[in-house]
Length: 286
View 1 (cartoon, rainbow, N blue to C red):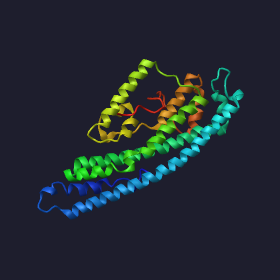
View 2 (cartoon, rainbow, N blue to C red):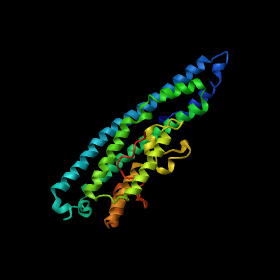
View 3 (cartoon, one colour):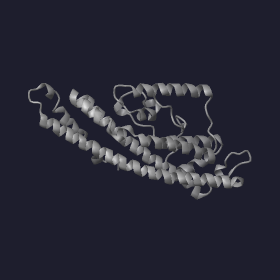
View 4 (tube, rainbow, N blue to C red):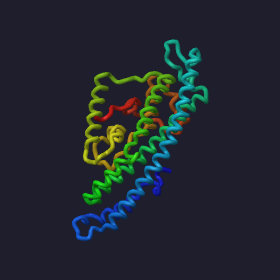
């Protein structure tokens, strides 16, 4: 499990070593041995986290290919059997589509993929916050610079490939929902534009704040976390967004009775609140 303590940053060990070096650059004895010990220990911790992150990221890439094939297969089946799966007005017929137990496994696979993405993003975020907190609160000026320079080189800090997977699953989710449930009911244009501007502004604020929080984190925050204590930051779960959007679309089609069964298949609880944001890619920070 990614939450296992042995697979996360040894916060106490790093903190103890860092605090022993505070002020050492001003002393006659520079404590070279202690500084070397810290750097070696810190380097080992970075390698440990990045190794695990990269390993899990590779697995997710393979998982994504298998899941995308399931979604494509369902889309093809719907297109080839439009008489059975599509209403005369062109809207999909979810009751017919999900009457087939095999088709119900498609959203199950998508949810499983999202669960793993959420876990890996949380793993990357918590370890990043731990290093930032140690650097800012427990390191000397010299070590502060060295720690941040090393952190900025780590793949778990940038999450570049993982962020691409997040964008891809958002795209595929919308394609799946549009094709099997129906188009989303959007807010009026003025409200949507205002929300986008406010969200972008908040993202830019976080991206440029002194805590050096990576941009991908700012893009992934729920609106309630865009301001506040950095240590309490948590990314918005993709699972929650997907289930909320699925429920909202079924409700808008008068098919609320389908929600419990589909959600039960996915082993998650439905959310009574609508999705906080659409599943398409959120505005990127400048």
